[in-house]
Each structure stands twice: as C-alpha cells, then as structure tokens.
Picture (cartoon, helix red, strand yellow):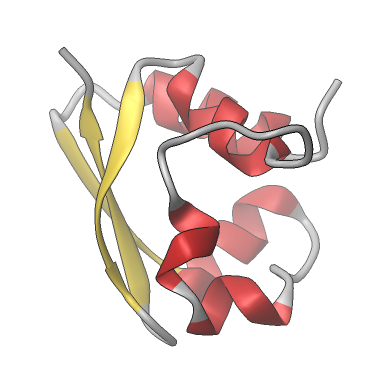
Length: 81
C-alpha cells in the first residue's frame, strides 16, 4: 500500500470530472505534509511513472491525471479518458 493511497481513495470518490485541491487539503487527506518539492516543482505532479513516483500511481490508478499545478497553492485533477 502506497502512502498516497488515501489521496487515490478521495479522488476515486469524487464524481466531478475536475477536482481542484489546495496543498493544505491534500495534506489533510493524506494525514502528513507533502514534501517541499511538491509545493515548488510542477514535475513532482507529473503524470508519468518512474521507479520512485508512488504519488503519480495514486491518481493514475483511479483514472485521474493532473491538468494544472499552481506552485505553492493548488493542483487540479481531471478524469482521464
């Protein structure tokens, strides 16, 4: 089980095609702070999976993808087709 499973579960429960969450909301869902790089680097929110990108697996496995990141503020997930 990934430490980002709670985010995946939350996104999977959302019926809206687009979900925008403030970083603070994501941290509340997860129950721990996001890494500093998540708040400053768009690349952390990439929709590609490498060996260590467990965060991307969380949203991709529930058929969501990141469509927009505003560093330091929020991220928008959309339903993947």
